[in-house]
Length: 258
Image (cartoon, rainbow, N blue to C red; front, side, top):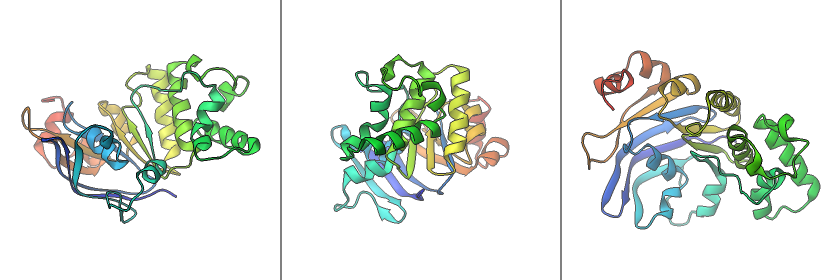
């Protein structure tokens, strides 16, 4: 079941460096939210804070609250592994496990969770690959290396691997930046289909992509080098791109800065 995400005053640090400051927003279930803004403004930091991935870096910490369906995922008694299982992540560059077959890439998470029954693994793999619009392209070569696929196919394989464990939220950090235009459109079509089941948050530098795939858009920015990133405006995507409330948002979208 897709989850609601609520951020209340989320401030993120890497050691003494404050990366983002006071981010508050609500992301509704079964929707696509795009995070846009210039490089270094904290989009990816905020995205990674949603599944506590930023903590893999030394001395990283967060202030404020990040709630998934009302549960603060930073409470002391919360199992970080369970959070990351519930919230899938797709990265900028396709990263299939290079020594594994297409099939084993998809079911890797299930095997980690203790699933061993072959029929279950096969059923889940087919379902995930169909959901990622990849099944018809790979069904006759599931035993071949995942790294042998094209870039766009590899990214869809990574999405299949992510959704095979049935997360409720899918985070995507510039998932199309390394892909050609045709592969990009395939991923965008897939995102539109997946929002029927998942809450999706996507970081993108591509304005047209944000306008095409998202229901709501958050614009992040910084004032000068060394300042923390802040959420400047968050609204329905159509409004952000046609009638933003903040001049800084308009300047960024029209290319006057950033």
